[in-house]
Amino acid sequence: MITLEGIPAVVIPDSSPAETSYLVATECPVIFTFQKKDASILSVTDSGNATINHDMGVIGVNGGEILVYDMQLDKMVKLTIVSTVNGSVTVARSFELRLNSDWKYIISPIDTPNAYLEIRLKINGVYEETTRRFSPSPNGVIEADISSSLQSKIKMDKVGAYVNVSDVEVNQSGKFQLEYRERFDGDTNAFTVEPHTWYYAYAVRSKEQGCNLWEYWNGKFFNLFDKPTYWLGTPFDVQFFWKPTKSSYSFERKNYDASGGLLSTKTDVLNNAGKGYLNSVKVDEAQVQAICDYIDIKLT
Image (cartoon, rainbow, N blue to C red):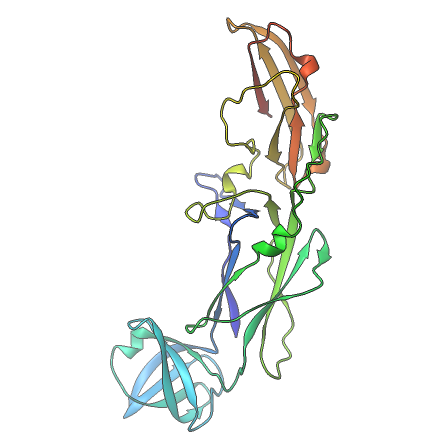
């Protein structure tokens, strides 16, 4: 049995009530972590050999082998089966008290031969034509990186042409759902649906940062600068991710002269077709006075 153990979501620090970001960057590993376990170990008892009590039915066959994960050794230990009944298996290994706490789960190769994980993605409402396969590590762990599938949907061309106040960047952002199942010789497993809708944006993150763009989930401008320079005569915009549960945004610009005097204020309600996407918001040169020294912009 392969189960989903970890997802690249992030609970936003200090959010009240607690809020989770499902926005990921495409240009770095986007990893869903799975674990193969054919049985979880409940306890180990002394029967001359070690008898492992587990949470499944019959595991393996007499004279066959199972793999048991040993936390102390941090590896799978291969054991020969002496006898097996529903809910327990006895192995040719002397009982040790530590096995009660150190042995965690069983993988039974005979029950799931040639096992692997199959993932299919629905990106922007359309299933990918091909599924992806991932094999377990020796400990049964699978780190499924699906970033290459997201990267294949990215185009360098911006949609925004500096005509509208805002444009939806469908070439550089979107959404996806993930489904998975264990496959092995003779299986009849159906896909399991990971329950969240995920969002992606064309962005680069370091391994230390992780792939989640949680700091941009709530409408922070999607740019690395604090005080950019606006060169008149050159197109200029800023981007932000429109959280799908946010009903509306307004874009406010205030122009100031060199002494800090307010020259003008302009506010536009943005087109909510951009929910769940990056949005490019234009700063219109026609609204910048000749004596303007700096502009303050914000989303409200």
